[in-house]
Amino acid sequence: MFPLWRVSAQQRKGEPVVVEDRLLIRRFNAGDTAALRRIYEKYRPDLLSVAAALLNDAAAVEDVLHDVFVGFASQAGRFELKGSLKGYLAVCIANRARNVNRQGRRIGPERLIEAGLRPSRQPDSAEATARTEQFLIVTSALAQLPHEQRQVVVLHVLGSLRFRQIASQAGEPINTIRSRYRYGLRRLQSLLDGQVEL
Image (cartoon, rainbow, N blue to C red; front, side, top):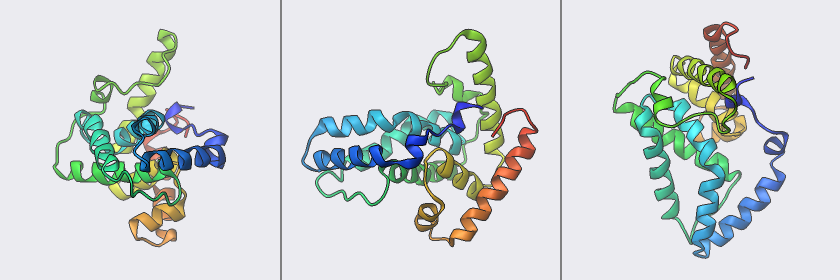
């Protein structure tokens, strides 16, 4: 299975992550810049994946991440964590990506590799080539989904948000979010046609 879709059991349970995040937020609100740096380093790879999966412009991936963290940093001293920090940041990325996409610049998914979005570990060259090809295939298929479906699939899979959280953020009924996810996965399976296992 392609690493874009891997979510560890620890991430699904969320317990150790939530405790650390709450401590980091407490330090962040107290003005500790090391806490902000730790949050950035901890979630950067996941948030880059979310941005890459939602953006039509590979050059904007790092910019979107930067903009989100500048906005987040401005909340120091008054930020209240409700739910998952990763989920909150993923929703911020999704919202910013939507705004960037509205500007209308489109490029091919192969440019994502040029933007430096490669699988996180560097395996031998044959494995790296295979993962890069899978990355391009999945990204291309995601780009063909309607925006609403793509956002729900990405936020649920890469952002680790539950349907209820996505529904709350979107202001939509939970059944609508579940339907978008289900239709999005079906469409992805059809587009991928067995090339990549979801």
